Length: 476
Image (cartoon, rainbow, N blue to C red; front, top):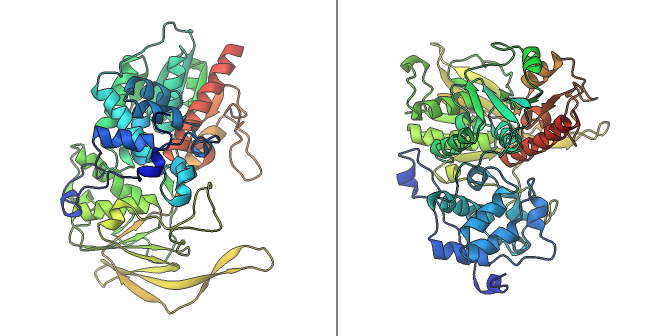
């Protein structure tokens, strides 16, 4: 390393967010950037540990110490080359990854982890700005054709790797534009969609074909694709939201989180949505049920739409703040997470169970009845169960957003049509080493294979599927 003792004299410095009263007026990215010299200083803090737990923590196996050193030396070409050896889309992970690597950083024992994620984003943005990222189509084609179903992070990663291996790749996407969760699920204030389009143009220039507005299973039969292509990769994600079957669920004004997020992203892209179909938080008290990242995205979107207030509730207990002895370094810490959206204003509550949705005599949503619970272990099963611990109360709300996670029955149903086998838990069997299902030549990647997960894990899964497909095609 250029300065092996920099971590002793240079503290962690984050770029931070744009001012609250400025950023809630638009959908521009909330994160700021450091200047070039400050970014190099932050990169110099990497100690190049004998055992790099950042590398161990990263699902992609990124070689952080190596590209941190290249960034410190201002060698952006080398830094970008090292970064993209393991991560196909650092411009995505550099923005929306929760940075598992930073939690594994040795300096995180003192809460002074290297700013790995921000450094990653800085490298890729400088590489694009300095003209270092150009189309690099494969030198030769294998003559094999692969269909990738779904263009989210897993599908894009699989398509990118397979194309670079020389196979001809066609990506099928049910929506009007590629990107999947990246485009339609993640708000613009976290990931500007021009960043996605920039990468897609590069992939197209390298030979990847995208066919949008095509829903496999409806518009195109999966068996027909198997006949047309040498291999098929199913990467359609897990977009089916978990519902809350409480009385009054059908009341107008109760929506799934993705209904709001997808619609707002389309509106931002210039799509005309009829007024009667618009989901808007303007002038309303909003209740978000679910304490994860999707719920946080609903909080930020509600502020930008002009809500009066936002409350976010979670049935689980409040996580510890700061440190959690149950999840010590270098493991991912189960601690309270406060997002940029929370900092914009949000009442957060835990241990609340939803009893019913309330409406007035005209049928309009007025609030949600909730009840505090405590968690007790069932002596017979050992499972923790919620037990009422307080009197019911009402949280006023004219808009309720359900953000309680996702399942992937669509992917399972699509694969079942081919006779794919299931495991003991009822999930479609996928060989973890090759990502192939029990159906010869049909592979699965990302959330379609594992259930809802992180973007970085989906990219890793897509890469693994591409490796499995490439090896399988070579064996043929």
